[in-house]
Length: 180
Image 1 (cartoon, rainbow, N blue to C red):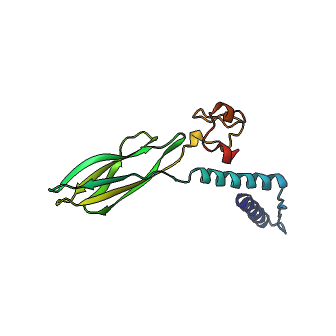
Image 2 (cartoon, one colour):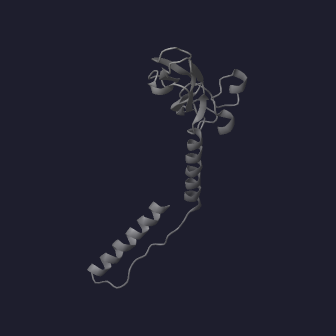
Image 3 (cartoon, rainbow, N blue to C red):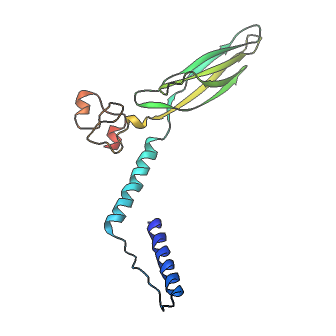
């Protein structure tokens, strides 16, 4: 809508300049009409962008806790924590923190596979038989290829379905109920 209004202003200014250059009096001002179809189309685009944003909200995939320590001597080692992201979901972000003695910090994703929500972690045990807990929260988001947004009645690129039969066959996309 703003684009259409700016276009009309540009037409108005260009016609005024043309009239001034050629010595004509007055200025041509085209009527600005807001047709119902254009307004409806704009409302549909706004609704679609809200649905896509909702589909992209991060969800908690898993929140494992690793109890570590209990050693006489301080030691540092690497391990993998996390989970599979779930059908139709891909990894999004993670955060880690330690409670108690020792420390832990993330080193990065365990693999480049978007469906693998595991994280490589470095654990540092404090000596003296003290314990700590390494907490990890992994968030995932809906894979756009497994979404029913704008696909109701059809099939998503990932292979899941967005039609009335998918519940019977057990092959619905993860957001079928909310999107369709």
